[in-house]
Image (cartoon, rainbow, N blue to C red):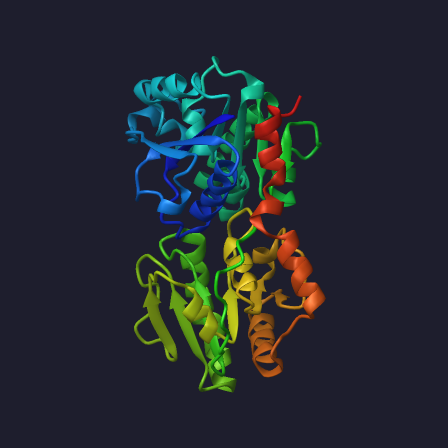
Length: 365
């Protein structure tokens, strides 16, 4: 089968959640099918993925005048409307058996020509839900536009999202073509855990609003409570983007972007995920768990993730500080049977099965 994957940009390197998911989708599809990734070039795909896979460059730009021309559309879609890009997508789609549009922004190039059963749209997250949670008049208006568009897509095509919260936000009555294809992770090639005492780790793209605001809140409201009780506590802040930390932060090590996460997760006693806005299922939590690192997260960040012995949810700033200190003191562990079951049930091969099935079978009928 020939499958066209339309994306805003190629998934390589997979250094943030949306790219991690797309890279997993492409990797699984290319094991059995001929896959073309059509999007804005980032870096070339790894040599070990080139068997059934080819990449094609798509010249994508944003036109702000489109916001005036299409006031009823979500900004992420309106900005990308382009006749030339749409014509290129249509031309390539005609040579393929199925087309996967990755995330809502690429639906700017869907045309009436597309047969419903030939198309699957992986929204990943509900942007309508994300905008609604940001609050404020502008984001509420954008949320309304986005929900209308997401529901329009789900009335016509097969749509997948990563969590039940996202599915219910788009389709509260269960009448539309929305399925869950959860986030997962690959088992790392090498996991050597030599955790250093009282060492925390936070991993993320620090230019992404939910990550940046979350870590700043943590440093201002929660970290001082931890340092007061545990003066030798350290926090490793790992990931791409601008350094989010105030210069006066005590016990913080800004690591920045790294090529290999294994050594940093190997040093950590505990991972944190203080996220308070957004949607979808947090890949960063799955990543830490697959490296065998316990996680203390805000209640919001654990949405869609099965409870387990290594994942602790917190309900307030004080509760998060308390649970971090308890986790450092206790040293969370899971039983071998639980570990094996969790890794099997949350591998990308398992979690993405509904999405792969839709592409192979020709969408919901």
